Length: 334
Image (cartoon, rainbow, N blue to C red):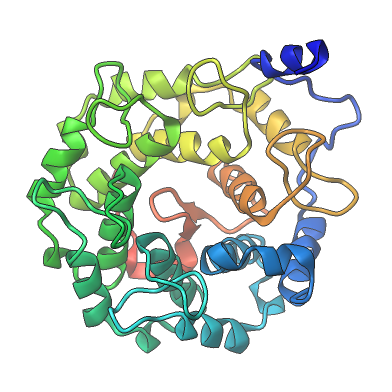
C-alpha cells in the first residue's frame, strides 16, 4: 500500500466539497432509478442477479418515496418477483436461486408497495420463516445456517406484514435479542459481537414490532447512536469508521423508533446527505464523490423523509416503506 493509500485508510471522516448540492435533487433521482429498471442488458443489472429482488425493493421504494411510482412497470415487476418464489415458500433473489429471508421480506414489501399482497401465499411464506427459527430463538437467513440479528427483523417484519406474527415464538426471539444487547447500549449480530448501527436498527425494529421496546434502556442506546455523528455531519456504523449515507437511515430510523431523533445535529446531517448526491446522473453514493447506486439512493431519500421533507412521502421508520402504502399495517409507537 502506498503512503497516500495508508493515509486514506486511516481517515475517520470526509470533507464536503464546496460544490456539493445543497438541496434534494429529486427529479434526477427518479430518472436515475428508472434507468436502472430499463437497462436490463447493462452490466450493473446483469451482475446484480444475486441480490435482484432486494434491488427491486430499493428501486420501487425510492420511487414511492419520491411520489414517482407510476413511472415503474408495475405488472412486469410484480410478475418477476412472483417468479422468484420457491417450493419451500420463500423467495430467492432471482428465479432458480435458493430462498433467503432478506429476499423474502423484500418480495413481500414490493408486493405491498404495488398493492398486490393478495398474490402472495401468506401461509407458506410464514411456514418458511417459522422453519428458520432456532431453539435459542434466533433465526437463520437460509438453510446454510448463518445466524444474525438482521434475520430476526426480517422474520418479524415479514410475518407482521402478512398478519401472522403469532406463527413465530416471539418470547424466545426477544430473549435472544436481549442476549445480543451490549453494555454500551448497542446490539451485535449475535451474543458477544461488537455493537453496530445496522444491527441496532434491526434489533429495536424487531422489538418495536413485538411491543417490547421497554425491555431496553432507550437513552443509553440513543446515546451510542448519537456518537456515530462525525464532524462532517455524516453518521458511521461503528467507532473509528468513515461516515456513509446508508447509516443516515439505520441511525436516524433507530432514533426515530426510540423517540430520540433530536439527539443528533439535523442541520449538519442534511448537509452531508445532500453532498452525497450525484448532481449529473442522479442517485446517492456512500460518500461525496463516489459512484451512486440504488442502495444508497433509497436510504438517503428515506433519511430525508424522516426529517420531514415535504416533497417526499412520509416514511415509516420500522419498515422503511411509505406510511401511505402501509396503511393499517403500521405500528403506532407514541
